[in-house]
Length: 240
Image 1 (cartoon, rainbow, N blue to C red):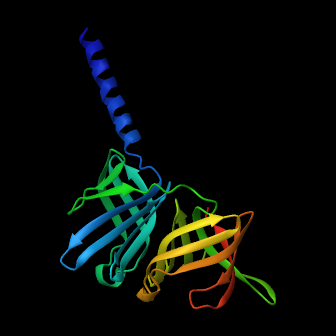
Image 2: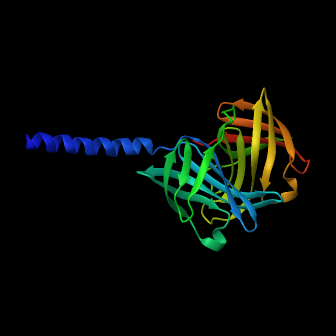
Image 3: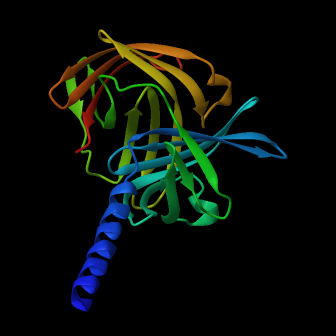
């Protein structure tokens, strides 16, 4: 009888442990949190798909980019662990990894660091171009000019549930070259970005840029004009 009770108890413990791991999985989405500070409201944006994390902080009024960091993540129990690929503030803080306790409550994602933050999920849905894309080439008068996407110097565009962000960085040196993001729409071959933050030029916030796009296997062909008005014909490749 005692052995039976012990077996049931052990089974219950194992079940609860397994259930905890199941419930700890974070639904892929874009999450937002507003932090009130003496300098105004800081807007926090989290993008999380099945394995990649990006946390960006900016002000909306007046427009100001604060910082961004991101990389591949995994969860263990209720800890979110990120191996950073980029950190725009690396020169100052030297941070290359994160380990953040978290919990899910009523659809919200709560990061339980020194200052707990409750992130709410976006209601925007998936679109054609959702995914992580690496700049892999350009088309010129001489034809396609491809680049090696495995090199440490990368330009990545991360699109998820109606939000976009591009980041230029070096995975070996942690050099940060710039980032911008906001919301996007991809419909019937037309791709439009609405800029919500831009590290290189805050005055560009609020602008809308429209491009043509075409999907060809793992490649996204992107044509139109840059934020400076220069013609562009880019090739982006989905990141495996």
